[in-house]
Amino acid sequence: MTLILFNCSKPENGITDPIIGFNSSQVVNDLSYNETLALIGTDKLLRGVEKPNPDGSLGRNKQGYFHVRFQVNMTSISDYAIVSENLEALKFLLTTIQYSFNHQLEDGSFELEIPSSLLNSPSYKPPQAGDLVSGTAFFASSLGLSLLSLQNSDWFVESEETKAIRASIQQLNPSFEKTLNHLITNKEILMQIDAHAPNRLLFNALAFYSLGKYLSRTDAIDLANQFIDAALAQTESESGYFIEGGGWDSSYNGVAIKLAMELYLLADEAEVKVKLQERFVPASAWQISRINNNGEISTTGNTRVFKGGEAFLGTEKGVDYVKTVRALIYFGLLTDKQETLELADTVLGFYSG
Image (cartoon, rainbow, N blue to C red; front, side, top):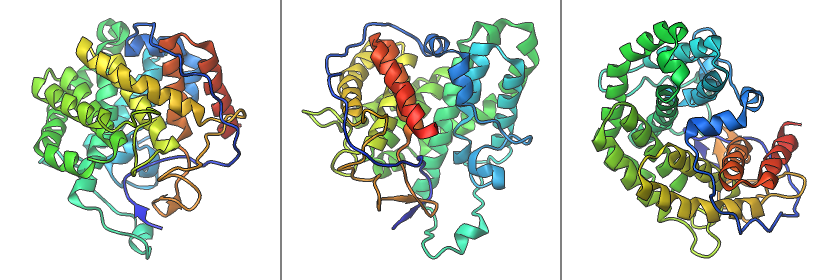
């Protein structure tokens, strides 16, 4: 069992009776990312919020700083803050961003502090340069999505109560530029190490696109399109799923369709939206076909996430149901299919009780 340093997922159980009959879905609603958040609503968004420690740490960083990659869930805070217009949530977001950049190095990368428990593990393998760049791209995708959605929020941009936080975030723009420049400098590494992992290619694309839009960097937006094209080229022609490890994987396909739809919801360019839609519609239909009637996501035949499959930080991976739930919500809203929205609730109920 290989210990992988920079990846994530959630636990999973097992049954089989997949749902079918969603293949006729098509996009009928033209929504932006912020409009989609408003339709999801504060109650559901609040369920997904990860509250940071007082210092702003999230995820594994709560046990002591590890790497900026583990700040990736900051978007759960900005999503809720925007829709609820909640100043307290916005303050939490600012704290998470400041904490992250307290660990930035001069070249735009971030400190790495391996916990002793991992260093002493017989299965531990030190991360390579590409792993660290990829981890930074994970973080940057969340940062960029948060910043761009804030920029598109009238409340955040115009309200007197958000003025001080706006100023604090703007003061960090040079640090955001350094992060983006670091990723651009290492674009070949990202394209090489993620060449056969469409979910990671889409994380990279989201990082370049969102930060590029926020910082008005056309070079980053052009790069985002290259990563989008590389990811979209890796879909199975008949069934439509994103190919992971030479086959299908119901966990990583759920991640990929979520990211593809977020890029679609952010995109201004019609040609970008068209090519994303052509791929995420059949891939979403395939994902739905892997969901059992009780809401469990079947791992039968998966290439990466299954019992006895890949591990992360010494723990076997389970299905990343959180991202599949968000993907189903996006897909239901874009296609105006109430049954897909209900399916998202069923999946969430199965895994969270």
